[in-house]
Length: 284
Ligand SMILES: O=C(O)c1cccc(O)c1O
Ligand SMILES: [Fe+2]
Image (cartoon, rainbow, N blue to C red; front, side):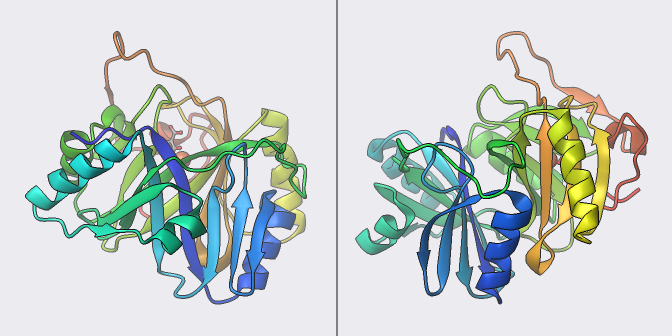
């Protein structure tokens, strides 16, 4: 079994690196930690980077997960190859550009590229974002799934993820004590559905709601509250059509006593305040 410790970064291609950087710093509230002609590393917490933009195809998405050691990386590679996945080992240069000791990559069943990473860099220097959005860190991703039941099996049976809740057949999956690190959202396509950052307070969610509207950033869903994790949330659209979420108050799970719950596939399962969802794959 592959043991995922946490999600550690997202890598996104973009047709316009400057527009994407401006959005990430001036609107979303991240900090540029490294910059080259065709790429930006962006910080949201103590980690060296949690989002990476590079010149390229906006449909090129990668999600990185941390695992604990090189031994675990070798056994993960063997596990994935044994079930028919092609596994790629990162070169020294590729590891250096990610600020990780080692990584492998493969494609999950719906086609999204996943990197399993050992020893991602943490910085002693305090995170100092360019806009005070109240971000406390990168927390979870939604990924599109062409077959939620098949993909849930992959994540739970190969990668040791656990189901915290299901909304219809949409599983919210945890890899540690946080309610979910991964959500599988039905779609014909693969790739990333949304990128979540936690903020400090409901005030931060509401302050951003007004700021985003002032800047004509499309609001996709919210403000609202998820009955599943308990988080107050706001979803909005960033560059290249990517959806970003701010949320606060996501619950933690006691592994010994928690039992997964089944929510109906209906609007109040997504928002207990009654907001209507325009989320791709979760419209109501
Ligand atoms: O936080 C949640 O519970 C949640 C539920 C549905 C979809 C999401 O993106 C979520 O973050
Ligand atoms: Fe989310």
